[in-house]
Amino acid sequence: MQHDEEQPLSGGNVSDGVVRVGNTVRRPVGPWTPAVHALLTHLHEVGFRAAPRPLGVDDQGREVLTFNPGHVVWPDRFSLLGPAERLARVARLIRDFHDAVQDFTPPPDAHWNVLIPPEGSDIIAHQDLAPWNLVVGGEDEWAFIDWDTAAPGSRLWDVAYAMHGFIPLSAHPDRQRSDAGDRLRIFADAYGLDEAERCQLVPLLGRRTRSMHDFLQDQAVRGNQPWATLWAEGHGDAWRSDAEYIEHRQEQWARALLAS
Image (tube, rainbow, N blue to C red; front, side, top):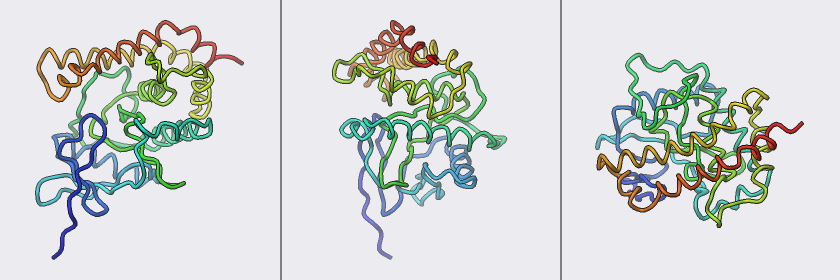
């Protein structure tokens, strides 16, 4: 029997042991894998296709997922999301996921990989909806990957994190956008946030971003990898700077989101 060659998959910050085999992806398992597979199975059963489909565990004990063809947006292809209609598509895709997961009942013994305590727990959130986890393929082949940190959270918790990455809301001079407020409004409109949700979101944008800095700092103190390495490489400084950038412009975000 001929076996397809394993191709290591790079990209992102945590990709050790992730390989492509034919039309599948193989990844190390964790205590959370059965719950994540139940989640992904549910999403496909209710018609949400913008996520890998779980195919079980292989003879090496790795989880097996369908391979999503296309290109990961971050860092070299962010221009794919420059047009307003493509940013809106991301927002609608996230809304479709949140609607699809609303009726998901986790297994009674579900174990989730909770990295950062969320604010709210009305859904099982992805927790890392960002350009580094979006694969853009053909017209009907956009998909979010890396669901291993899915865990109880809230719609707004997911949305605040996604807005940081997809607008983007960044202090880095190469990523700052003069139209950040406009893109924030485009995202909120496409997702379908109501006025009350927009009011809640404004302060959450900074808190959700700062939570990433605090998480990395805590993990670095504990010496936990790969987070300690990311902290040493300056990722914590980047998240702190972005949080300060967002917090100092709350009035600007409020005007953009709440303008009639």
